[in-house]
Image: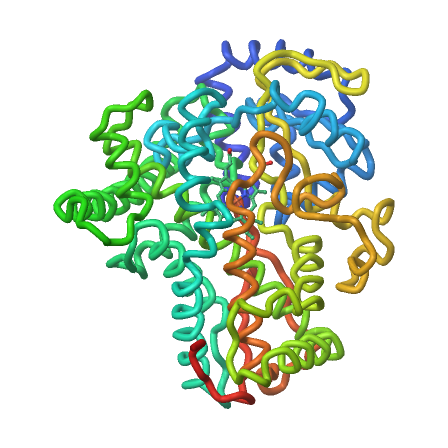
Length: 504
Ligand code: HEM
């Protein structure tokens, strides 16, 4: 974990930083004054509130606890970077609705810069024409309801592979976390580049590493003016190594697509579409690096968000056996006629949908959404926010705030039975996909990639904890990263209850 370094190292680094940047530090403290009117914990010279991060296992918990003391609009200074953390619906509304346009940019960081080929994809790309057009193309060609529907056979095949693997481990603990991640990755890659990729193991471990390093709390990101920091912390080396591996893989994917050309009748994937746009020289000038950047964005944004949700859903269900039974009864009742799961009757899986909603409330895969910065200074609820402030909406804290939710920490899918909460960001205490202009465009695809594998896990198998562990004692610790998965992989013992039959 990047920030969890021993305090002696922080002290040493602070001293070095002081010696080397004392002139800049005067500039930092001058800027710090611009934030003195915003409540927040007391800052220390040079490190600001960085020392607080040493106590945190995962930042979204710590930010919630600090907000309870300092308020729903809170200033934190981590190194040179000023953060404003939002923890109430009222303030969130100002960021994602009232001032959405002003907050439509993303903060910069080493991982984002390198993996987005210098901010030329979507997630970290500045708000503007390039971002708008790429987002539109990806929505039309990959993420629209029609396209998502067309990938149904991919979901069905990959989920069946997953179930076969699980069935082969019947009676002994199966590492569900790992298998879910690989299944999600295979669904995304087949939809985006038309086939499974080579070096799947390398790719998935790079995605895992990128989500940890890209959380925005690396020392090198927190002291951007100290140019040698990425070198001495090893961050530059790690990120470049990751990038080299990815670039090699993506170059070969693009090359294969180029040499295959426009074969008639062959499925046109996102890479084909982007190459065509590049060849035709439309108003969107695209380089090969831009194309690689977009593909990587889809891989990273689409893979672990879905698998993490299934992992948490299964964990919550195991801890709540009566809810697990209820979910299994529903899926089996709907599909026992057919003897296999397909998406035709998914409208009838009412309880499964409530489970997914409740899982995304308690475990939003991106607890801070993707942070934003404001282009210009603005005022929110009477507080002036200087331009270029990094604003974090703590969606995880909103989803667990007892002000908005009864028994907020409990897993109660039934709470959504009569509620109007949807995934579209209309209720700001429930933001698993964000809201406003930068809201997730992959919602339908993401949900489809959760529903089918989860329904199959519940239909075909019964589940038990490994020997010696009670269901209620399942470890629910979270790992650190942009996306928050379980700290320890979920191992469960499956028993086959309905034979595996592929959809007709
Ligand atoms: C359960 C599944 C998913 C969840 C919970 C999720 C959540 C999110 C969230 C919270 C954001 C940031 C929104 C904001 O800043 O307000 C986001 C952005 C994004 N997501 Fe997703 N996502 C999921 C699946 C996907 C999939 C499958 C794809 C594509 C394959 C995708 C592509 C993107 C992209 C491109 C962005 C950046 C949008 C922009 O900056 O304009 N997501 N997602």
